[in-house]
Length: 144
Ligand SMILES: [Zn+2]
Ligand SMILES: [Zn+2]
Image 1 (spheres, rainbow, N blue to C red):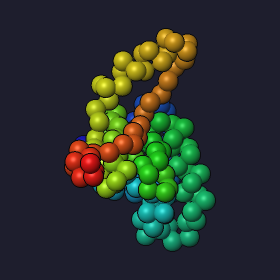
Image 2 (cartoon, protein in one colour):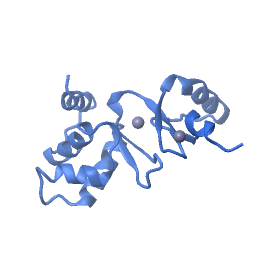
Image 3 (cartoon, rainbow, N blue to C red):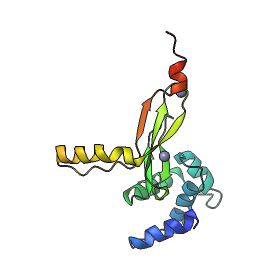
Image 4 (cartoon, rainbow, N blue to C red):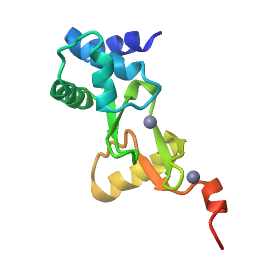
C-alpha cells in the first residue's frame, strides 16, 4: 500500500476529507525520505500549485498535526522537521557533535510514559521525541 493510500485510509477512519491542495502537502511529506522541513514541502507542492504560499503550508501542517497524521520535531537543524506518523512511532537519538541521527524504538518509552502518567495523572503523547547527546564515534574522539 502506498503512503498516499495509507493516508486516505487513515483519514476515512476518522471521517475527514482533505482538499486536493492539503492532500498535495501531505503527499510532499510522504514522498520525502523521512523528515522534511516546511520550506521543502512548499517547494515540492508548488510543482502542482504554483501560487501556494508558505503560510498555507504552515496552516495545513498545524491541521495535520491536530489530526495526529504528522509530527513536528526539532531535530537540531534550526527549523522544525515534519514526518508522517503512519510510518510508526519512533524516536531519535541525535549527536550534537556530528549531527548523526539514530532511530530509537518506541518500546523504550513505554515505561517512561506509564510512570509519567501515573505520577502526574496525565495522558502524555510522546509521538516523536528527539534526545540529544553524543554518539560513540564522537565520544571516542574526545581528548583525554
Ligand atoms: Zn523521525
Ligand atoms: Zn557523533
